[in-house]
Length: 430
Image 1 (cartoon, rainbow, N blue to C red):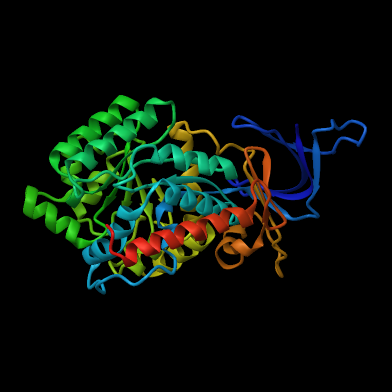
Image 2: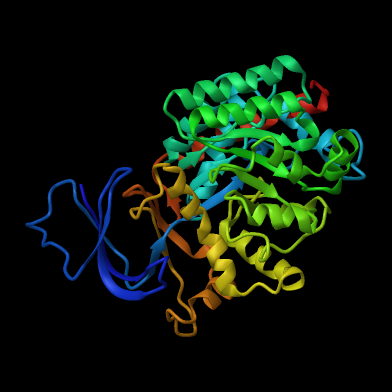
């Protein structure tokens, strides 16, 4: 089956070359994309082929999220915490660590399906996720993977391991990660952060990453408390600690945030092959501050940190914050926006090939050219312009509506599980 897109204004996501053309999109994880001068006639099309009239709309590669927490999806509108957090550590203690302890398999499934639904509607067809459910660990990663695939999204998953819930939970997290990666799935060895990961867990996690040929996915210096704990407990800063354990050796490793680094740590990162993911809205929401990334490494990509599922919104927020921290340009921000695809390719994950596309109804009042596109990207394009989305050669969103699943059914299930979660939180069952 071939999906033909007629009359597109196709933007090459890498070169920014614009071309009026037709497109032939082949299905499957390895499916390709061909620019065509003509569309086959009705008599030449097979019964399984489909032609979509794009009417000159902008068509380009779909989007990817470099760091998400889909388990937070059911928290929207949840009951207030038992105590108003006064700092970042209390945000974790009174909000997110209470939420993740309440999650069960049904809530995880509902969170993943709803998040995937929202990502698809915002043009995101690949997600790198960081999951936590300390009392529902076994099978959690496969549950998320299947939920994403039901909508049509590609993924790289990990379980967020830590020492905060005891030895049994720590061992269960390592076992879940090992089982998931041993099944043939691509993913990461997830860790929460240095201040919740002791030397034993860090050592085991690096060994597990080496075993599976992957990297770590860990929050780093999101708040100053992470550095303070590391200095007090280990007599060194976070990046140095990770380096000494071999945690910075893999080009597949992702470090989230990296807000509070000194010059020596930044130098260490520049000399390593790891990736950094920027989540500026989450940093602002948690009042931990923001930082610049231009001098840190070229391997910077963008995430949402569970705040939402809209990568265009994340790019705009990072750009605006970057005016004060690093003077970042639209061109530089577009590169960060697209860097997730480069990372996904290097790790060898499927589901982010050329046959992942977004059709945008962006009727600009000014001309769009290859030279000025990044200006449109920052100041013009919105997720509301996403009309249709193609994932691995298959249309999953058509004219603003997800067609790969029943939207109403997915959201009804999410609301049902959300109420269950809220009742547990109100009863303080953690």
